[in-house]
Image 1: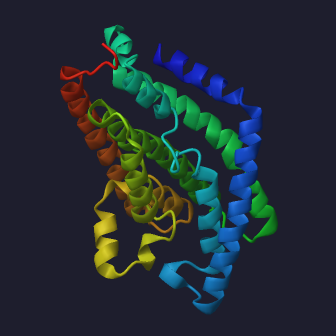
Image 2 (image 1 turned 180 degrees about the horizontal axis):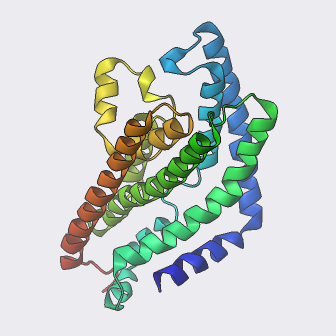
Length: 269
């Protein structure tokens, strides 16, 4: 059933073609702005943060390709959950014989799959045509390993991103209007996740703090895996960190959901 929900969510988002192209153009335009900014910075400070210019530009375009996939700037499919909590329709959802968290995870993974396909490929291909990007290097086996690790990391990033946004969405049970929480989440995820700048450019204390927060599992880890900044044991450890955060955050979401259900507030009744 959850696979069917995921597939229908993919088809639902595929119907909004105008919105998709608008997002593609916006992501690509911002990609050029950020890429030229990075280019100017790296020409003054080559190998800043351990990235050469080609790796830094690749980092930029990976970010633009993943922007809609991990829903950095919004709540993704969980906007619907927030609305259903606010207007009281979530009471109907709680009567259904399905797990609420599993249902919305399936919906959001369908959305993420479509966004990766529609909003990820075009910005990345445009960046590759206009800039010298760094693709995985080495022998055929090593390159295949990097692509496999990157694909697995993307899947784990989608789950961690969902788990974080699910916690944000659940605050609607208490706050009803969660725009303030969403803004705080956006700032924290973008900054500590390395979306604005790689966390290796931070001062040591701030880099250490970012390293122990879950936001690096959303973007920095997949990008660094693609750029081969880990050796084989390091790559396995990075994937393990992502998996651990996915388990911990999904568990936290289930606990908060249990508390929220105990005090369901239905607007108007």
